[in-house]
Image (tube, rainbow, N blue to C red; front, top):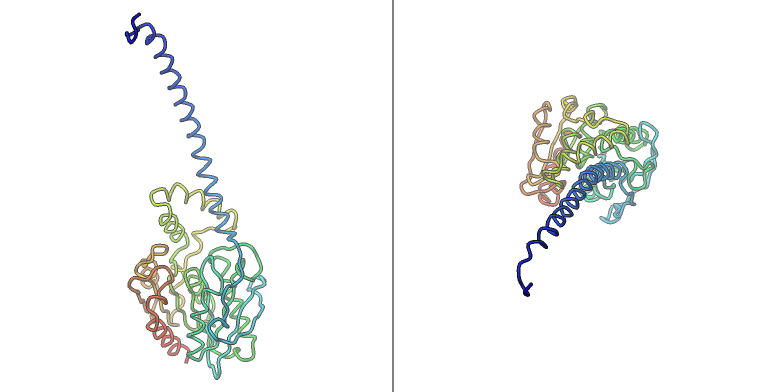
Length: 316
């Protein structure tokens, strides 16, 4: 046959075989993908849940000394017996004490700047690492569920100290710490005033928002199994952690809610929901352009003024 001539016999004998091989290869690829996708989703969801409940621990990077405040290292117990580490910063002639609660997955270093301006305003200030964080005992974080016991243990500790046993107590918390402050104040009348900065209204809602922020439209695919694994690893129901259901019990003690308008991890809607559910006296301050827990960085002196005046009025 001349060079370059068409050979119908060659096409007839090789093309069907080639197509058959291609179909078989495609079939095997699809089968592998159908097996691998659920394994990847479940494996990734489990890892997300595990490291949310067991985030890596690190020691506080900043101390009150970093901002020129003298302090005392203290150890105390949570309400359920967990050994916790804290700092107590005494102020001259203080008549009230403020407890600061950090967010997830941080440590008490997160609130050092808040400690500094409240100390300058004449308050005794106390802060601590939640269980499983910083230098406190434990390796499990329940993102608010058992951390309420840590805050209530701090209240008990301050009631046992000679210089604070008769002082009014205010609390300020960021993110998870803000949610803990709301739930703690609802359960403990010794807490006389609450500032919650970027708190979540419900933990299940916060989990949904975090997955949506990082995974977009894939969020439900990973969130449902991750929540399933997380609830079993930590032994509690996410839906049971709901400051929204408790916030009304803070009244007649005052509540100040602060939230950044550009917060996409816990949206300002959460604070609006909490404000609507709370009873007077209550305030809601939305800080334009602030991202999650960054209201102080954005508002600066205005943040200091509002928070200081709130506590001065509530705790005088």
